[in-house]
Image (tube, rainbow, N blue to C red; front, side, top):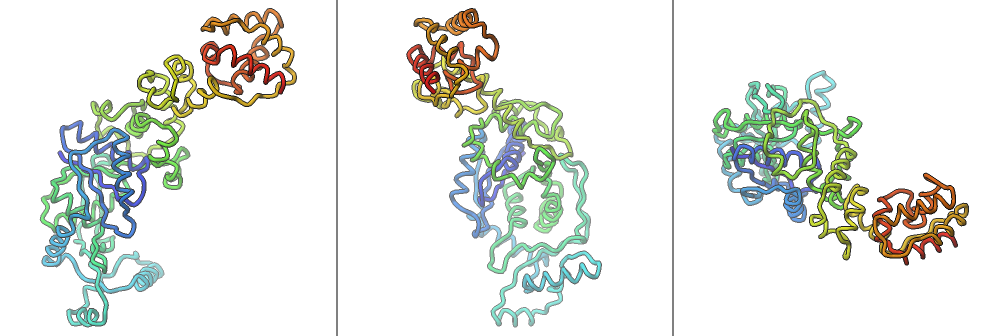
Amino acid sequence: MKLRFAPSPTGHLHVGNARIALANWLMARRHGGEMWLRLDDTDTQRSRPEYAQAIEEDLRWLGLDWDGMLRQSDRLALYAAAAEKLKAGGHLYPCLESEEELAFKREQARRQGRPPIYDRAALRMTAEQLERARANGKTPYWRFKLSGRTVEWEDGVLGRRAVKLPALSDPVLIRADGSFLYTFTSVVDDLEMGVTHVVRGEDHVTNTGIQLDILAALGGAEGAIRFAHLPLLTDADGGPLSKRIGSLSLRQLRRDGIEPAAITGYLAGLGTSRDPYPAAPRALVEGFELSAVSHASPRFDPRQMLALNRRLLHAMPFEAARPRLPEGAGPEFWEAVRGNLDTLPEARHWWEVVQGHIAPVPQPEAREFLRAAREALPPEPFDAATWPAWTEALKAATGRKGKALFLPLRLALTGEEQGPDLKALLPLIGRARALARLDQAIAA
């Protein structure tokens, strides 16, 4: 078994790309096959080296690796040879129509109630006409002549699928500038690489019908490559995810503090009957099967992913978190705050709360109570028993209880209405800092 993930380096990877990459990787690892990374970078206008580098970095951050890598820009001679083979077999033909002429033809077809597919007018062009056009400075682009059949295959996710080729326009495989299009290069590479399974998004179903026709024209054996198409993700409301995809790039999620295991665990569970759980890719291999993926489009809900992120952090040991915690933060701090974190970078805020400076919150109605709290603050050393002992004494002295007792103290000591248990935070804040903050709160 040999699979490939083949992104175009024209932008940053997003969660939809990551789901495809993960599915290919899991399938390869589950069945002892190979997983290759192929950069489909023949679009020289939009491909960028920085995006290519980012793709590798983001995949490694997710915990994915590959058994080999290649770039289409290094394989132009291979595509040129394949193109000559198609021309010799009568499968590629030159065209000269401009985009304006094609748009006019499509509009005319619509007005006449016909499907707006290419009419193959270029096939009626004589060799003399073509040479005359070339002499006048025109350069042809090349279309693939689709066969008149219906292409069928058993899809690894969607079941039996069929594409009626007569209902489609002959695809352009080579632009007038000589550059090759993805529809063509992908087939040539899959055939030459010996790819056995192609796992990609449902938006490629029609492409698959076309590419199977090209594959046959190039001499590929029927059934040599098996296809599986994953239903496209929608947003939490069932709408197109593409409108929000910028905020769901792996780069942005990483900056936001989402753990890679929360992303991979969530994506692996989407569209299946299994509840997702946070896990690195290697922990997801056992039991992974494409047949478990539903035909329906799954909803990508960032809130569910964030819940997995919280679950991951709440169970994360100190040693795993330590490299990303503020300098000086120890196990006691991590144990105190991890249960209140959505993302690990939030720990920096709580480090500032216990060791830095906070803005005093005005509480004029609680000044007398805070004065009493200041006077009743126990001596050091502080430990886990200090907070309950202090609040019990204040409850007895002032008659306050519940929110009226605890909220003014929390606001004075942390500047926040909610947060980690003060039984654990107070020893980290220390008596001197607690007294200073009570004084600030009284004076505010």
